[in-house]
Image 1 (cartoon, rainbow over the protein chains, first blue to last red):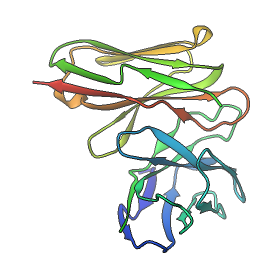
Image 2: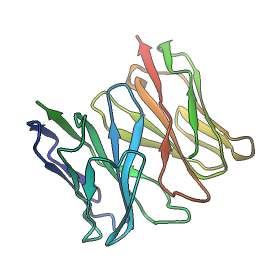
Image 3: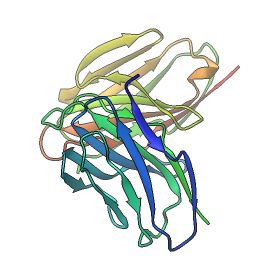
Image 4: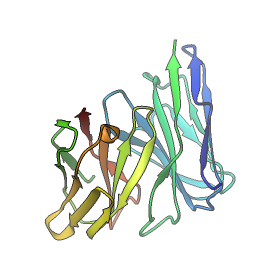
Length: 115
Length: 110
């Protein structure tokens, strides 16, 4: 089955530690995205990538880093510089990178808790 | 960037009632989607509807792009319809990624 796989689903981290969230898609989609959701809030864009080896900052990129070395993979690193990292992180992809990207599909998300 | 406003923020219905959720946006768009987030956090695609009208069972949606709004209709609501409904849009110029509204939280009571 085609889809977007995020791992781990739950992650606990101590303050000061970096953590990397995995996102893999087998939909052959060109573009991939990372969103953050805080309790009771909407989704905010962290980073997105329209093509391999290229990515752009979203609205809340500070304290995060990404890479896109392969079309199917878009890992997100939450660094110790991120002041409030506890959140629900959602990875998504679209068939095209633009000008009309097509329908956005999401993975099941990763819940990060900083202790 | 583009602004997306959803109303109402909260809605409580009795099972069997109908409802209309609204999404207003501040600029021209070439992409508009409605999502349902279930209690486990999963985001389910409802409609990809940058313009026009679509129907899927008890749900339908209409987007009037020239007037910058979209409506989601839920008829004969069921308890399984509970959750948060998000509208998300992308402009036809500039950034291609979807911008989300803050959502409408729907609770359907038996």
